[in-house]
Image (cartoon, rainbow, N blue to C red):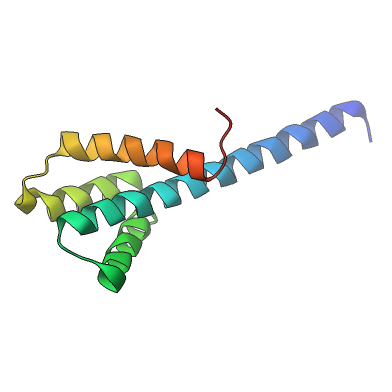
Length: 105
């Protein structure tokens, strides 16, 4: 195997690890923000966990992150939470997820 092939495989492995990490961060972020939203909706315990899981599942829909935002906006609008506040919470949750998963600083 040539050094070029080895470098190529190395880059492919690195890319694969980065993609896997990004997926894990998004799933963790969605759970964190789902638990935050569940609290605003007055849910606790298993009900909160189920709601957070539904937020995680929304990411896996065709629209991806747009589906997460649409769900949160629709669910939280009656509680007076706007898109700007959800954006802030998503960013905070992303930072927290990266920290929990051991992202380099």
